[in-house]
Structures are given as C-alpha cells and as structure tokens.
Length: 233
Image (cartoon, rainbow, N blue to C red; front, side, top):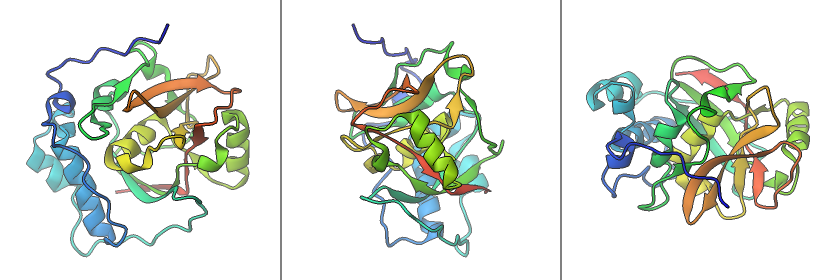
C-alpha cells in the first residue's frame, strides 16, 4: 500500500495558480540577470509570494536584479546534463505548501512527507535565513544506484555541499526540466537527526513527488544533488 499524499488546501496559491503557470523555459544562452528575473517571475506566477504574505510587486521589487547584475559561473564538474548554474532559494516556506508548485506540465507536485514530520528535516549545513543563490548545482545522476550515505561521503571529499529539502524543492520549482526519468535526486543536506530517512524528489504518476528514502538503500533512478556553495542575494 502506497504512502498517502499529504493534504494541501485547494485554495493554496500554489494549487490555485492557473494551469498555464510554470517556470518557463530555461535558456542556457541567457545571462545571469535575465535568468534570475525568470526565476523570480516563476515564483510570482506560481503563487509563492502569497505564501509569504507578500504581494507580487513587493516580492519582485525585493528579489528582481538590476540589469547590470552578474554572477561568475562556478566551475562545473556535472556530467550528463546535470549542471544548473544557480537557483534562487526563498527560506521560510512550508515544503508541503510549496510542493504543488513543482509542476510537470499541468500536473501539480505532491508530497508524501506529512506535516508533522516535514519540519523535523533540518539542515546539516549552514544556510542563509534570507533569500539566497544556490550556485554550481549538480543534480548528481552519477550517484544513481549509490546509497545516499556513500554519495554524501564522496561529495564531502570533493568539498561540495548537499542540497537541503528546501533547496531541492526550489530547484524543481524553477527548473522542472532537471527532474528527469531515472535521474531524480536525493537531498542529503536535511536530516531528522532521529532516523535514516533522506528526503528526495522523484517522478511518480508523471508528477514530481517529494518524499524520502533510506540512507543506506540505493535506487537506480535516484542520484544525489549537490552544489558549490550559497551566496546571499
């Protein structure tokens, strides 16, 4: 019997956003300022500002970059199309309320982590408390069929940082194209501290699903996401 999907209020902004709302298409030729503007716009169209009690214009004013903004790309070691230059992360959001914004086409994302357990997944790495950029991301398909425990040790030796549960959801919201069949990702930067559960995002019934897998269990379709670092916005 499958794990039940966590209930979300159908009036939530991330649920009620029109079917056409999506993160838009990523253009690898786009500069930093334009890509950051696209990500901010995706958050607005998918209802995220309302989750924070902000109107869209206020959210845009706070986070949209000046046209002159730039970011030196981080060195990338990602292979097989796994590299993402950066992702805007907005802290303070309930991952279950944000999950519907992980859209694949018109299908809303879902979570199978219940509302009691979700807050227990705390970062094991230092993360900013204000909006920030996660940069030099690698979705980590090289670690498919490798246990999260082993993948984390390898990434730590490379001086890379694992993605947290919030960062993995943010990645899936603004870059839905990176969640691909048999190339999904565990988020080893968040743990409960009381069990061996590792949060992850994968595809189920053609939807993005937030759930968890065991630290010492490998899955052929689940890699391990990491990044070069985090920068305040």
